[in-house]
Length: 474
Image 1: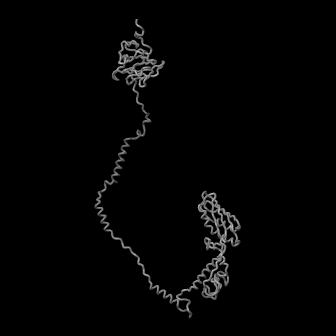
Image 2: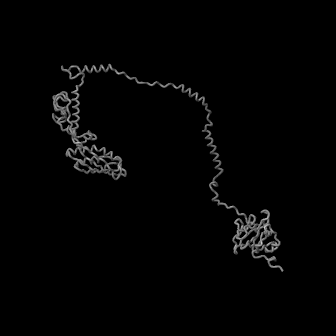
């Protein structure tokens, strides 16, 4: 009596019945293998390329299982080509399971008697397209069957909205026509303006023509030099002779004062002295604080003491004899400087009457005021503050000189604070006197600053502090 393991059973199992219930498609079939571990299918593959199926611990195998002593084992081997070849099952003594063949379901142990041995001692059993079965290797179970190849999956493609870019929106026919049109028209224009159409230039002929034209150039006109007239020495001699003869003639039965109309040395010195005294007397008649004096003196560098001494003298300008210049003399006739005493010639002379002669001039020494002023800007920046204050020192000196007439010993300082507007104008100026400086001098200096004009300050406003030092040089 045979054992149950050796007797093949014609009754299929539940797994086989489920696989047979599936609808099969006609055509060449491919191998489908599933790996079951602990009752769960952990991996399933459809061998679409019809190649060998290997198992073992090596990572290059089709299925990686942890079995000692098995690095790579060809469980399903393809014999022949991929299109027409057939699979055969390879198993060893350490494997168990059963396979459904054409004759029925057979255990692996029963197939050892009819199986063919391989070069490595494995058992080889050919499989048909309706073969299926279960192979147990250690704690891993392989289920296999042959199924119709799945439909070929199309290659993944991007959506139409992504695949269509600017190139799909371009009318290539119109673009090509426009491109060739532009090339044709611009090429024609470039051909017209290129030097290809220019005639050939003969350089030898051009050089020869240039040489001929240079030869025909007329010479430049001569440079005209002005004629230098010779000195008419003869005419000059005759003119001097006539002047001498006209001056040496007699008039009114008396002798002439000189030869040829020339003045003697004493007469020339007397006339020059009279003119100088006339200038000093005229300046002295002006007031030292009015606008006329400011216009005459200019920057104020002339000392007022000498002018005041000249104005205080009795000569020059006075009210004697009906007013006007006190020139002396009377009775009509030509006015001759020095002809009578007490006139302009008396200034700086010791004697009266007679012809004017060069005499000694007494120099009047008055107080010499010294004015020093500087500028410091607060609350802004004024570019020309120092230069404006420097130009006002002459007018500060005149204010100080006017104060010295009242108080000759006046010294000290005046602190001026000026508020500058956005256009550089002085909005307000306050002057504080110090020392023995009078308020009139301080007010005069403040009015000078009030009329000044500065550069527009940075920020629209500024304050300029001007300390004015007033001293005397003895």
